[in-house]
Amino acid sequence: MVAQIKIFPTETTVDLGDLRKKVEEALPPETSVARFDEEPIAFGLVALVARVVMPEEEGRMDKVEEALKSVEDVGEIQVVNVWRT
Image (cartoon, rainbow, N blue to C red; front, side, top):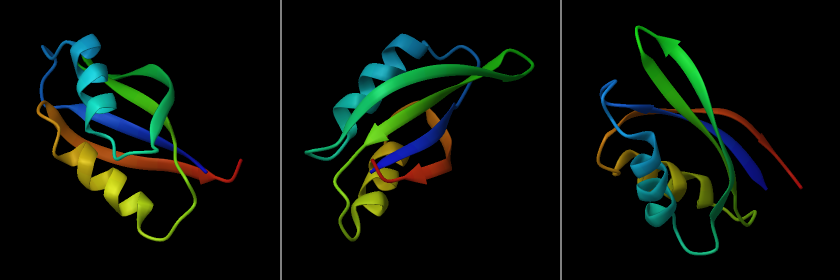
């Protein structure tokens, strides 16, 4: 399945390239980012929008959310959409 997740950095000064690497490294096994987009929010804040591909199994989404919230420089996450591939 694929989840579209909006990742808000803690500050406008966070390097989004570094944040992408940290997000990819933090994901559980068998989970990956197919694509990143950037979405301007307000006052210079830009969110990353990640399309996360993962196996469809119970509890997987919870593990992904926990992993993303634990990443340094991630202030908040928002699951926008989830669909089966």
